[in-house]
Image 1 (cartoon, chains in turn brown, green, blue):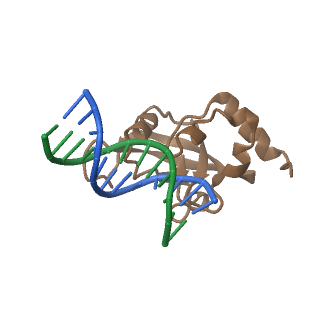
Image 2 (cartoon, chains in turn cyan, red, purple):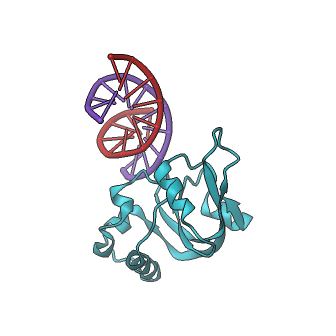
Length: 135
DNA sequence: GCCAACGTTGGC
DNA sequence: GCCAACGTTGGC
């Protein structure tokens, strides 16, 4: 799930504990949120940031319910709970260079703010976060 | 701040 | 249903 850190950062989620993921106004992203279940793990991605990348882990705390910030019905949000910071920040630039992640939606649908992560990609990302960056 | 990519809107 | 215009997103 992507958020602009200037608006709502991973640190903000850490402070708040749990937050409503409001403001999604894209049908595809909305449909993915609808499928989320409590306990589903989430990669918290900082978009429109320098650098952009994955900051940490969160999880779904509440399934889809109406987004009160929407001016039309039909838009929904889920609640997301802080889980943990990754051992290190994974920049988009670094992610791009990992062959195991080449097929990630993130690169092909760069504007989609909520997207599923394949189990294999998930594993590779967590392993990467624990590993030292290869210079 | 710029610009490319892409989603949405609206005229036909 | 097509497509041009337009608005937004997101990387840099």
